[in-house]
Structures are given as structure tokens and as C-alpha cells.
Length: 453
Image: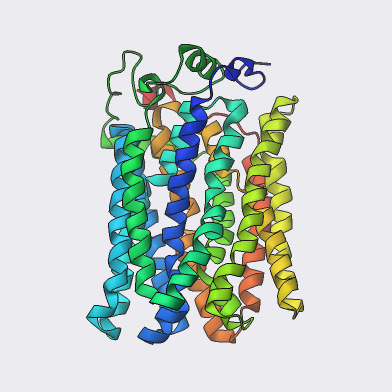
């Protein structure tokens, strides 16, 4: 077996790479907290502005429309200008638009719906490069045998964001009003963007990275030259528009990649239920106060965080003990999605504590199975890591559009969340089928010679 998939003993020399993934964790935590602002402030905002459930579904979806549209341009920008600069601008701009959402009350109730949609749309567009950049940075800084853990660390930030920020946002909503939630999170994001500039570097340019750690990373399969040539000069610009389209075509014609895209779409549907409609579910169907819903929403999130880290560690452990990459990645995904389907049981219980326990189990499973970014780091062609990550995230986040809208219409049509929980459980089942039936062997996709140039 190759050193890229088995032993990385030399990586004990230095741990600079973990300071990079710690920064990815912090940025991703703010990223998801900004997405969840509307979910926490939503009940009070809906009451003040007189929005219907269907209107809220469309406002929730505004982020997703732009996020999906921005994936391919965002991935191209990452390959062209590098992760550090593009990510900084992404964080700064999305934070400004988050802050501005707090002022929509000033335009009146009718216009506020359109203003909210427009501002959420801009947040989504600005956030588009974030996860492709995360995957790209992990591919550059981590060997194959550590990518599952590294990807799980930054991905688990989405759960910790709820743990840390949901109670804070609930408190701000109750005591100071929903606009303050947006002002607070916008300012936090602007501060984090400035810290990013001081902390993050490419491997060959990091002032504290020792040659021994760099060499061990490279021997283990880390793509240390992703943003820079060996002499430290900027990487060459991507090819022409025609070459880019050819590369995209090769990705979408590949069965393995299509299965990965479908799986991510379904897994993200679970995520977007939890960060959009879940707090509303607790308030409207389970009779909790807004403040209690903000606090209680953190319980499943804690379990999701634990599951996310466990899934990555478990996957890497399977790889290090001789299992194939295919087995190491698919096993946690399938087990995690089976656990996620347990949320349907909430339709058959009345006790609030039992609902919280079941949702915690479901989110724990979702965390275990959320290994899509590790898989894409393992499979993306080296020449177009950013573009490939953007395409993966584009397909995955179409569910950020469809999930809020479908759930909104289910609630409006039935007066209940029961059908919504079945809908989300069905997505978990499709994710399992996609990885077991469509994906096949997980391996790095090699571009044809004429498209690799």
C-alpha cells in the first residue's frame, strides 16, 4: 500500500496544519450562524412583518438560489486567485449583507419581503466560494489519511454554530429585537475576516511550517502546490472558457461524481431543515417559546457536532487499518443516514423531551454521514480542485432552494410538520442508495490529457 493512504508517521513533526483547519472551523461556524439568523429571528420577524409560511419559505430559499448560482464562478476564482484572497473577500462581503438585513424594517412591511430576499440572495452569492475553498485548503494541507478528520472538523462547525450562536441570537431577539441579531452577526463576521488575513497561508509560504512537516504532508498526498509553484510564485491561470466547459462536462459525465453529487444534495436537505425550519417547528408545532427554542435547538446541534467529528475519525481509522478508501468513506455515510431517518419517529410522540432526544439522534447520524467534502478532496482532479468543489457544492446546495420551499408548502397545505419530517427522512434514504448503487469505487478522477492542459 502507498504512503498516501497508509502511514503518515512523519507528520508527528509539527502540527501547523491543524492551526489552518482551526481557522476553517471558526470561519465555517460564522458562515452557518449567518445562514441561521433568519431561522432564530424568523418567528418574531414573521409576526412583525406579517409574512405567511409560503413567503418565509421563499425568503429562506433566497440564500440557496444565489449560493448555487455562485458555485462555478466561485470555484473558478479560487483556482485563478487562490484561496486566501478570495475567501477573505467572501467573508467580508457576506458579513456586510448580513448586517444590512437588520434594517429591512425601515422600508415597510410590504417592501421588507423583497428587501430580505435580495439581501439573503447577496449573502448566498458572497458565501459561494467558502466550502470549495475549505475542501481546496484541506486537499493542500492534509494527506489522504487525515482528510476525513480534517474535513469533519471544519464541517462540524455547522453544528457548533448552533450550539454557540443559537442561544445568543435567541436572547438578543427576546431582549433587544430581531434586527440586533443581524447587526451582531455582521460585525462578528467582519472581525473574523480580518483575523483570516493574519492566520492563513499556502503551505509553501507559511512562516511557521517546518520543512519536515511540509515534506511529510507532500509524501502523504497533500497537494501542497495547489496555490503556488515550488518557487512560491502564483499558480498559472486556468484555461479558456472552452477548456473550463470541457472540464465541467467530464465531471458531470462521470458516474462516480454524479452519485456523489446526488448524495450531497440529499444530505444537505437534512442540514437545511435544521437551520431553517427546525426552530420554527419547535415554536409552532411543539409550543416552545422563542428563547427556549433557541436553547433547545443547540442540543441536536451538539450531537451533530459530536457525530461529525466521530464520522471523520472513524473514516480515517478504517483507512489506516487497511480498509479501502471506498469502504472507509461509505461506511460512516450509510450508518449516519440510517440514524438520520429516525426523525420520522417524532410524528408519533408527544413529549417535548422525547422529540429533542429523537432529533438529537437524527442530527448525530447526519454528522457521522457528512463526509462529502472528504470524498470530494479524495476524488477531485488536481488541476481543477476549486472548480470541482464548486460543482459539487452547486449540486449539493440545490437542496438549499428546494428544501425550505417544499417544507413551506407542506406546512401551508397540511397545517402540520409531519409531512416535512417524512420528506427529510426520504432524502436520507436516497443518499444511502446513491452511495451504495451509483458511486462505485471512490478514487481520484484523472482528466483526459487534452483537458488537463
